[in-house]
Amino acid sequence: MGLSSSTEPVRIVRHPSRVVELRLDDPGRGNALDLRTAEALRDAVCKVSTDPGGAVLLRATGGSFCVGGDLLAFAGRGAETGPYVHAVASAAHAAIQALYELPVPLVTAVRGAAAGGGIGLALVGDIVLAARSARFRLAYTAIGLTPDCGASWFLPRLVGPHKAADLILTNRLLTGEDAEQWGLASRLVDDEELDDAALRTTAELAAGATDALRAAKGLLRAGAGDELRRHLTEEARLIATLADSRDAQDRMASFLAARGRPKAGDSRVEARQSESVS
Image (cartoon, rainbow, N blue to C red; front, top):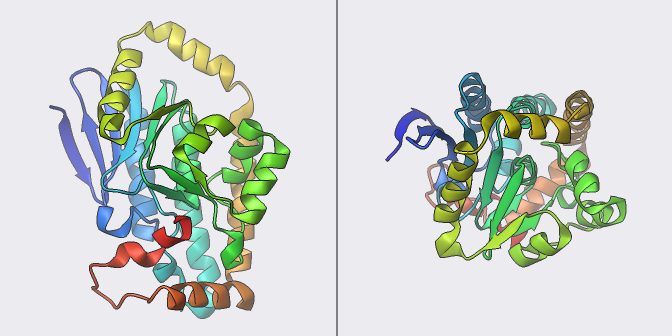
């Protein structure tokens, strides 16, 4: 069993196999990204980046990988919506950039909903394992926003410009099987096997030829880090600007109202955004 340190709602687990695990650990909220969660993720990734072991695994507790931005946290802020969304995006983007720049292999394991910012968190992995239950949907334009967390940077490089446009502009839903066929996922795994397969894959990488793996990863990502950084900055600016618009705020309010906005303290809060990928 690994040694765990808690940075709620994100945990770091260090396994004897030299695997360092980053675990999104707020399943009651679908691991949604509000400012607290985004900052916790940023801080956890920064801590891991100083000692990443032999390989890093990013996965989540519960039935959803990450349902994206927490619309309940975004809605109702009026003139403060844009600055709040920018703060969330900036913290999440710092985590994405640090994950992308890890010198060791990064494996991501996706079960259930991966929506909005959860797409970027999934796709930043060198190897992406998708469970059959995985559901990928961007969902931004439906609420008057643009992609963040690098989704609009990763997707054209993985699936090509036309399929990326289809996913971003129409909010098309992809199953785990679709994700493997389209090139978002490296491998499709049965749900009951996902956790074992993810840890085994990461442990095999951690036990591999460290220098060669680091050098190979460096070749695969040579020169792309600065481009990603500039793109993330623009994504954060655009989503914050749109979040301040009346159209986006009305769309977010309508989205929540149509799904029965939970009251404060309601334990059924996974309804916040997870229905956007169903």
